[in-house]
Length: 116
View 1 (cartoon, one colour):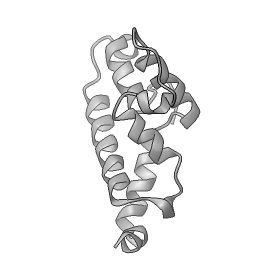
View 2 (view 1 turned 90 degrees about the horizontal axis):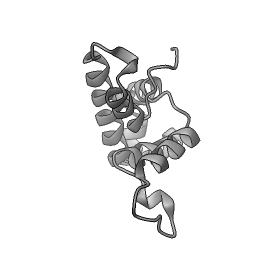
View 3 (view 1 turned 120 degrees about the horizontal axis):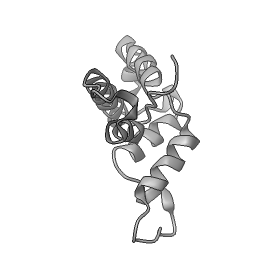
View 4 (view 1 turned 60 degrees about the vertical axis):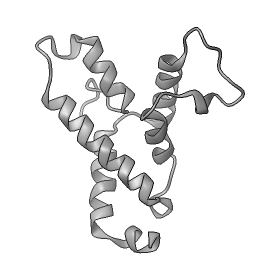
């Protein structure tokens, strides 16, 4: 079943779209999520487990090869693409200066300041 999904042309398109929308390198995303996830609670023994969702799932997909994707990974990719596109379409009046909007996108691995 997963092997069929790997060979599916739709997966190729999703892979390409995901990597076009998620434009932050995995280590940079991890650092951002660690910053966002830090607060009064101290990190546990495995800081990656304390990363906020859906960023943790996106980070996990970024660390995979295309041939290793699971159906769950493909769904994470679809959701990330959809949410990033929704947020970028709803650009606020203050644009890139709107920290809440920009941070919501960074949580998904998209930096509006990175040129395509």
